[in-house]
Image (tube, rainbow, N blue to C red; front, side):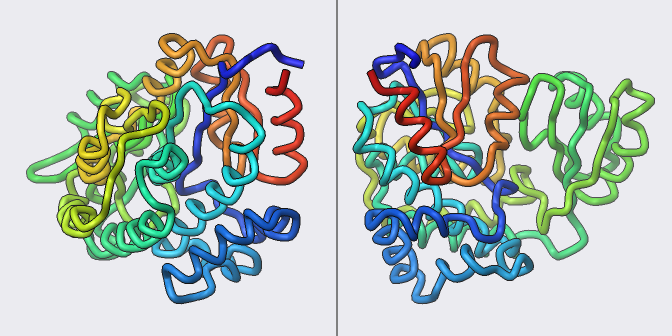
Length: 317
């Protein structure tokens, strides 16, 4: 058993962690999880739960579905985990996962967040005509090296920038497809181990998403944002949010800004002193990234009944 006494962090996954069948075990095992799925279905006026549990995979991969689905599974898991433990020392979410972290901290109502991420997904999909944008993962270069490679690979008015600083040696870039393709061709010569085109529907977290940010801003101004019950680290600057108003502004900026995940995870470990992080929701992507970022932080999965039981046992005194 780990002697942590509140020295734990909650981290929430983003797009890419989804899988058909996600959340079904939580739904079957816990009435509080069933309530979360019911609220999501009611908020959207459709059976999002059915897409989570049954797919098909093509429907789950649609950005308009992926984002509310991942949020819902994370909050279903959180509804089971939170009553069992003292509050986390800090929370953070990767991209979309920031909404989950804000709901967990009481900044946003869950039903409002579900509607917001549905709109976010639709707006991001519509911001760039299909085929004009792209993303790629660059493995084996530092963030600064990828930034330089972006500068040398784009031409004219093309957009090409880092979108996700996922690990010290893994940076995702986004922008116009022509520029992304050029970067992939040049990556090996720049010292990269690999540069891989990603199967995404839009170039997220880059300036091409500005129209989506504008659409989201209009909706978010209609929602109530409260002060967080515990610190939540924002993607845009890897710093804790100071107020509900700051949380709203960060979510707007986040759409067209890079996700600073390396800085976020180092802050959780070094400044907040967390010794364990629970990945609340579907998959183990964040745990894999943490092993490449953190020195001592241990990450536990928290997306199924068995995983939640194990995490609770490890974190309880």
